Image (cartoon, rainbow, N blue to C red; front, side):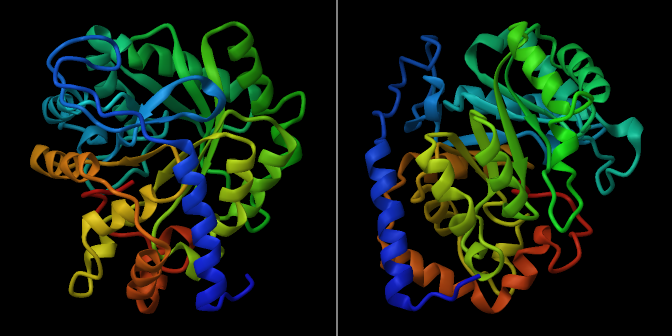
Length: 346
């Protein structure tokens, strides 16, 4: 990766901030009006979701943490309902997500998140833009996931279906993805049959194969890891974000607090700094996993009060995390994954 001087990095960030400004922020919803026209919701700022024609809340739910844990159904449902009540209209889950609190290694845990989300969707489906994923790269496997996702989510339509966790380091067979037996055939078939509306990809390991996919196919959305430590190794902000912006994709940021590691080492930065940094980029929304309602409510307040940072303010935050970037970028393979899978973890 080409090293940046402060001046060149500042100019790079200024251009990104200008792109964010061009996207614009719709007025926050009033307490009497929601995305679906229902009453009683608190407002959140909204942004366009790329070329989809949809508007999404700038802060959204990543349905991991409590929502994906076995034995936490009631708590998960409470969090999902509270998210919608507070103005969140975008929920992201996956056929992969499911934990026993510390581990997600067992296949029988898969789908726990979708099932908990589905308990809310059976009565509130029209209030949210619903996104899920398949981690299978084959046509047959992806179609099996789609069938189970629809059942788990208690719906007959998914707004966004994504290829989960595009990897790097030679571990991703892109040609197979586009082969007659590959997952793209499943995505296109589901869209053509109007079971899903939009198609996307996700990843947090390596931006290079994701850029190759985005260059090759007109995906509607991309979900990528975006936080203040990103620039210090194999940067998504440098390698993939500009391309996604140029293609007017719906862009979702994840790993905002790096599974809470961004608060370690004496508290490198605050959640407000972490969220404000990523939301100052030209993206549509961020997804964050939630453990408890008070955590959610605090993050909602940050989103409601969000004001874009200047390039200099972003540089200061990047510098704060520099000495700990290997610890923070564990999801790129620079250190081990956390033993505990809790907290603001997406």
